[in-house]
Length: 453
Ligand code: CNA
Image (cartoon, rainbow, N blue to C red; front, side, top):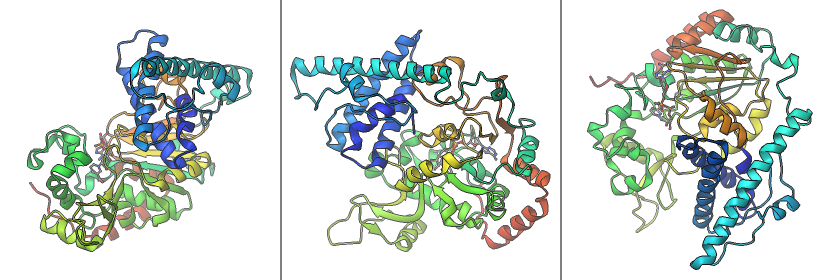
C-alpha cells in the first residue's frame, strides 16, 4: 500500500490489530512523515531521511499507544522488498517491547530504535535500486521497449483510442468533489466558490473543523447544517456521473472509488457493488458510542436542522453522526479490501475532479502498475511532484505521482471542466447519444434544489 516504511512499520501492528487497521495506520503515518520531510528545509538526502524516519518513529509509537499494542518494529514487506529477520535483528530493528516509560533509558532506546529504522529504510531503498538495475524486480525503465509511450497522445483522444483498441476492460475511476460541482454542490478547495472559502454561515474556527471529531463533539450544529445542504436526493447526477455509468454498462468499469459523500454515483444508476464510498456517505449512521441509528430519523433531524442524539437505548444520548469519515478516522474496511483486490487488475485509471490533497485516497494514483495508462480530468493540474519531492519519494519507496513532463509515457491530461472532458470522450467513443439520453432522464427524475444565491 505504501513505501519502505510501511513495509517495516506495518508488522508493528499486524500481529495485534486487523490488517485493515494496520494498513490504514501505516499509510497515515507514512503520509504525515513524508509531508513533514518534504516541507522541511533539509538540503540533502540524509537530512530528509533523518526527518522522515524520526517523525515516522514518533507517530508509529503514538499510534501503537492509542491502539494499546506494543511498540516493536517487525519485519514485513509490501513495497516489493522485504527485510529478513536477520537483517532486522542486526540493524537493531527487533528491539523488543516498548521500553518502560520514563527515565533516560526510554530516550536512548528511542534514539537507537530511530537510527535503526533509518538504516533499514536506506537499506531497503538500496536493495530496491539494485533489484531494478539487475532486472530482478520491476523493469528498470532503461530498456528501450519501456520507453514506448502507452498512449498515442496524452489527451482525451489518446485515451479514446486506447479504449477503442480493446486493451482495457478493468477501468478504475477515482472521483472527487469537482465531478459534482455542475450539479450545484460546491467543492472544498476551489478559491471563491469552494466551501472552505464560504464558511461564514457555519461559524467555524478553521475550514476543516466541520469534519473533525473533537469539534463535532463540542459543536455538532455546523456539520448538521452542511449535511442539510449536501443530503442526497436534492441534486441531479452530472454528465460525468452518467459517463461512469456508461463505462459500467459497456462492461469496462471495474470500480468507481469516490471521495464524495453525495451518493450521486448511485443516483446515476451505478450499482452499489461498483462503488466504493471511500469517505462514507449518508446511507448509514451511528452514535459516537457506536450504536446504529435509524437513517430515516437522521434525515428528519437533518431536514429540521436539529442535532440528533442516540435513541437506541435509555441513557446513551451520544451524538449521532452519519457514517461519513472524519479527519483521523479510518476509512471503511471495504476500501482497503477493494484497493488490494482491484488495483492489480486495473488497466486504465481515470481521475476526475479532485485536488488529490486527502490521503490515503490521493495515494491511489500510484497503485496501478507502471504499464497502466492514467488520465487526469480536472480544472487544475494535480498529483505531480517537484524534483526534490520525487527524489525523496523514490528513496523511501513511495509512488511518484503523475508525470505530465518530458519523461511522460502514460499520463493523459484534460485541463478543464470534467463534464466537457467526458462528453468529448463519449463523442470520440461513439457514445454521445447514449450519454445525452442518460443525462436527460436523470434531470427529469431528480427534484432539483433551488440554489441559494
Ligand atoms: P477539493 O479539494 O475541493 O478539490 C476539488 C478539485 O476539483 C479541485 O482541484 C478543483 O479544481 C476541481 N474542480 C472543481 N470543479 C470542477 C469541474 N467542474 N471540473 C473539473 N474539475 C473541477 O475536493 P476533493 O474531492 O479533492 O477533496 C476531498 C474531500 C472533499 C472529500 O473528503 C469529500 O468528502 C469532500 N467533499 C465532497 C463533496 C461532495 O460529496 N460532492 C463536496 C465538497 C467536499
